[in-house]
Image (cartoon, rainbow, N blue to C red; front, side, top):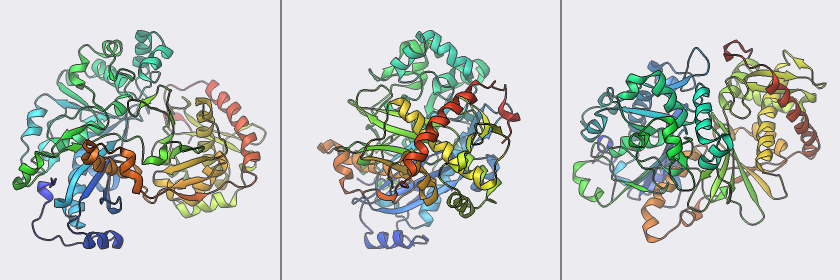
Length: 561
């Protein structure tokens, strides 16, 4: 049962031109061994990881949207509109990135005839609007043309709202009123109404873009959109990703009638029925598959999901408690909880999640401003400044933040006086300490507490920066662990692809990942960290309240950054 991608399959032995010596040697040593692919359609890039049956990473690749697809004119993978609240991404950019990525993987020497299954993830809350007739187009793709050429006319909305958008405040108010208040809405969907959540974005588009909305035959999330490309038909939204829409009843795992009606009549027809996150969706489209393998593919299946867990290490084991901090475009603090009502992971468990908008893009801005664009100088600034930053504290919200709902840059000296600037080194540390203090503060308000045995698992691009990880360890007063692969979402997706093929035999996901490498300890807290940041956290909470009490501007475009 071999999934062969048609356009990228070559019957002759592949010539390996990969620059990764480790990956090349692995492929040479096991030319016929099965391979499982994991994709991640994230904010700034499209990534892929390939693993073998023993969970060894045999290939990694990516396409950077800004630099490799400059014709779309994105910054950080998005278009930030004039009101500084509306944030979108061009859907054809994601399609063209897939064309480019598969070409890259082929040139690197990965033999697609070894691929047995693939799975993937996508940035949560982003949505895609398929034009009437797009389903027929997907089912009849011409293998002699690239996907982005074939699908140029298939989207009723060319620029789609993503998770950074904060422009649907009115729709949030309307939804909460219809549901009986924010608390009642959270009881149904796991969250109060958030501007980035898809239901509120749909309600806004129905009002502001009625013609395009009327021309829409299906609405996908980024994850189900990506799966649809591989399926050659519309993929269902899974429970986990669907919980980020303010539309899914997380207990019944069905669309909430109250929320649907408040958003738009008959919305369920555009969304399709949601499915469990472990569902096998079907065979890969014949567009990707060499025709002589179609018969074998009919006996196989494609699994695609929005993964919330990267291996077994997300869950508490014994007395250990694990929190995850993502160091990517958005920053996440996640914790497994068996009884809370936030995101359904499976039929028995939920996971609490905090999302922060101003993550790596804000760090890159401060790096450019204060460290000459150099991560080495950025790291040196962290080494050269003391824990606690001589009492200086900063809040850096380049765009409207999610947690807390604030905007602008706010700096305070050791006497809690607001100041307009700090030295470059102090600015770097104020940014990092402020980001991680915010994560800790709001995680503790959610119910998380640091106890003996607590571990922090860091993922995302910045998880390779030792000085950033040291600040994370110090602020949380807990050891920090990382995995060897920075593309954790891709890796988790590849694990899911492997699990999809063995699940029918009764094997659990945890059985599959038993062979996964254990996270490695990379940072331990400084002996004075608890004393420094315990007191600093109290100040940070008070200063955050001051920031929230300041008048919010109509637009964040005039905020000093």
